[in-house]
Image (cartoon, rainbow, N blue to C red; front, side):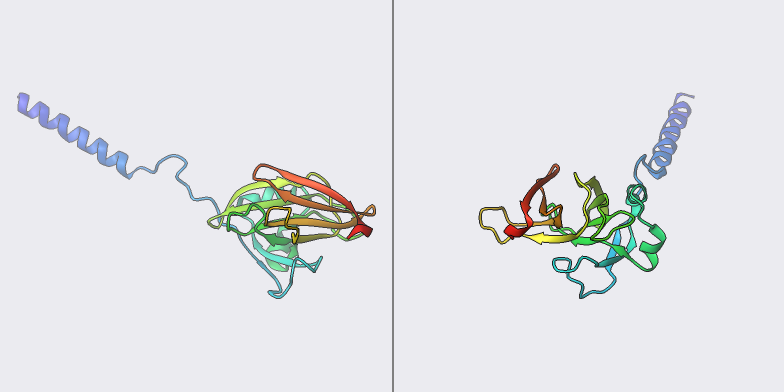
Length: 177
């Protein structure tokens, strides 16, 4: 009788262990991947204000919709964007201007930081921008890396560099450069 009771208890524990091992763990879902590419592979975001990207932004969709990015256009035809490694981690990041982007009108910008093909973080630039390009400094006094530049708004050129936590913005008179 005691042996039968211990056998039943052992079998119950084994069934419980097997059942738990097969059950999915909470929060063990893989986030949607970010898959973005330039529409024209030769478009240089350091010299062109109008590079278009096409693809899927994964979990960043609500952040881009908030500033008027047409996700359907982004997936099918392309939307203005500036790819670069803004946090210097070796992974491609993407800056997306909002609806109405042109060099005559300032719009909000969201930057998607990625890691391993998945969204890591979305940040807003501290100011609205009009003529957005990738910026690579040739100034030896600055740390190497890529940033963003807004040429000539209000007779000033704004440079944005990510410091690992947020965006540092500096301005210079447009005539000085």
